[in-house]
Length: 332
View 1 (cartoon, helix red, strand yellow):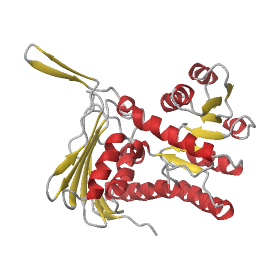
View 2: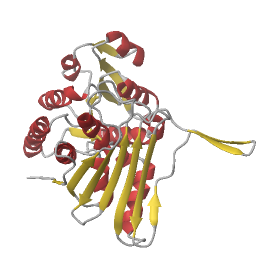
View 3: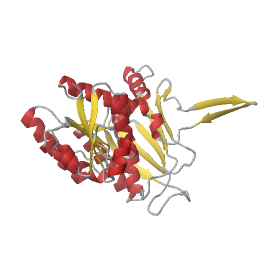
View 4: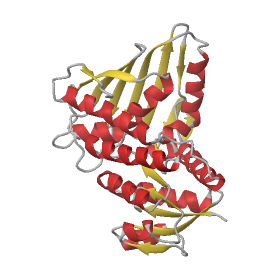
């Protein structure tokens, strides 16, 4: 029998999850979709799926074995806690919650669940952990074939920021991927961060300094730089280069097409992050569904990973409001 999945949120990410679960993920069936816009939910869903505007109805339905939360960041913590109450496994899109207080509440509830049942119901959608490029990069770092990693350089550029984006939300919603992937990649926790911004683009809104430049230092001393540019206009780019003692290792550039004609070479760049990380999303969903079908703990990021990223984000925001001062990350 397939795992019957309810999806909360039928926006960009929710619609992608619904499509993947319905067409490419083995052992899954989308049976219920919740969205404030019932028409949008119906348009994104298979004909057999039930539609509701009430996420609680979905979570407590006898027709749902597991839930994907892909709604607005502000709803994540509350919906995850509802899934805990219903004893329903949940895959929540990042971030775990937009505030540290909410993240702490979810982590405490998750710890209580583990203490009572021996397992966690929560999986967190840090999909880069399943991206073949990042997986290969991590493997290369772990072998130490180039010696110790000394520095990491990351670039993350989007064509346009989400409406209402601020310098703070750029950290908690966009840079959060690097805040998770860097300690995962290097096998060492981030202990110190800083945030800087120079001249800002005219394409940004009020409250958003864009682009921004961040640094992260791990417990082992490896320094990471991150350029985050939400309004780059030309398309979507993610880069990551590890500089080690004997060489460098980098992610391959991702392009949709490379055209060579009349003495020129032209590369077609993805308009957003979805083509770049399509494999990562698919592999993450399949790993989640397959583990649930076997009655095992899914090998995805969990509550503590979400909290760790939130703690790093809090320190980064503190640096933002302290004129870029180097700021320690407190995990206690």
